[in-house]
Structure formats: C-alpha cells, structure tokens
Length: 263
Image (cartoon, rainbow, N blue to C red; front, side, top):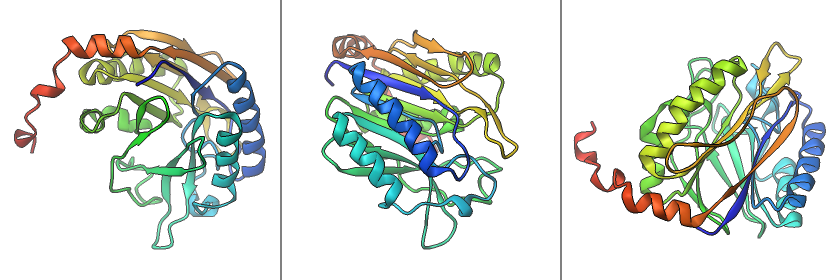
C-alpha cells in the first residue's frame, strides 16, 4: 500500500435517472480530484438508483454507464467505485459495484450475500475478488454484507488493505452510526485493514428514503472521520501505509485462522 486519500460519497440517486445520476457523480469526481482523492467510493446502486423492479434498471457492463465512469476515472487519475443494477443475459440481474481504474480497465464486484428482499430480484455473485489499484489492494462488500465477518476475512486473507462497504440502507442515521461503530470497527480490527463505508441519501421518489452517512476506520478499529448530516457530501480521509504496517505487525489474527474448522 502507498499513502493515499480515500473519498466517500453520500448522495441522492434517482431510480432510472442514469444520466442525471452520472452528471452528479461527475461533479463529485471533479471535487474529489481537487482534494487529491486517489480512491473514490459511491453508494450501492448509485448509478441506477434503488427500485423494486431491478430488471427495469439493468445496465450492460461494459456499456454506456460503465464507459462514462471509466472516462471520469481516467480523466482525473483516480479509481472510482460505483453501484448499479447489472444486466445478466442468463437471468436475473446482478447487484454490482463497478471498479474503474485510471488506466481505463473496468472490473465488477457482484453482491454475493443477497438480503431477503433482494434475493427474488437479483442473481448472487460467485466470487470475492480483490482489486489491485495504483495505491492499495481493495476489497468490496455491499450493505448488509458488513454483517458477515467471513467476507472481510476472506478479502483480507487474499491481500486486501482497504475494505469498502457501499450501502443503500434506510436505517435512521443515528442507528446506522452506532451499527457501523460496532460491525465495521470489528471488521477493521479483526482483519487489520482500513475500512470505508458510505450510504445512499434522501428520498428516491419510489418509496425509499435513505439516511446517508459516511465513515472511515483505521486498522485498529478506531473512527478516523465521519459525516451524518443530510444531503449530498464528500468525506475525504488520508490513509497512511505506515499505520497499516504498524498495526499488522502486532495484529496477527489472520495468521492464526483455522479455516479447516470453519464449516
């Protein structure tokens, strides 16, 4: 890992208004670049918005939306992560998070642990990839996947140094903050990684209202920065390689895992 600046966005996304959402994301990319951000994360389903008819919003990857985001990443020299409903020619769409690198490559994480309301609408992904960005190795998990420590430990064991948890959760902001302080602090501490999380904000106009929120934790599980006021916001957080190395030199939990017993 190299020293870097992480950007976490909370924003309102209108369901189906892909062009409008991308325009607002372009504004955030411009703002983030001005703050020296190296890795920018948008909420779950930030491109397509959250809608109960997932297939109606599905976008091909590669496609126009991923192409726009890829050009933004290349233009500003940063890695950009953003969520969308991804078209699946084999059936139900995927609930995905794009990872657009500054060199033009585009990767995708497909949510593997679907909630009970999502399972009838989406197909589950089948892999937990770690993405090599210019500044750090990054793992992704979406929303309630924060509650699965096995996901975090698998990603960390595969080399992840930063874990990102984009959300689209209607939970009240105060409760969301307290929940993150428990679950995501534990993910950071247990795995010896930086953790960043961000949530959708505002009324989607389709019966869903999101509480926003953005938060970052250091590898010791301590809160580094947070924002829980309403409305769109970019939270920037410096992540230091030396701090990660120092914590990992004394935090040996991953080295002593016994996966043969975890069945």
